[in-house]
Length: 143
Image (cartoon, rainbow, N blue to C red; front, side, top):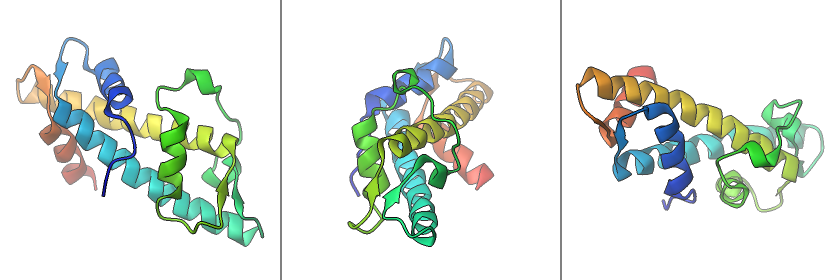
């Protein structure tokens, strides 16, 4: 599976948490892949909610979001988030703009949580670089 999400905004999210630590390209790639998987799973659940309501358009409420943040406050770009949302759902569904923004916000929070934990793991390993293994270790510990 190819990763739809560009690594640069994911790298920025990790760096936001990393302080003086460096961030490897592998860490950004590993987190981007995890974000994509998580977003696709959330979209499946949202599509089920929309279907239960008799709709073919996913809305922000289908992702459990009542108030949508401003698009300009997000690091993650909306177009790849839209593609992520559509990865594992039927082509008959549409994703409303507020749903894309809501999903981007959810995925940013998810990325920040993972990045924060990965930074702690890098510090614990006494390294100056957050690496892909820190991202993967987080998931092996908390899944």
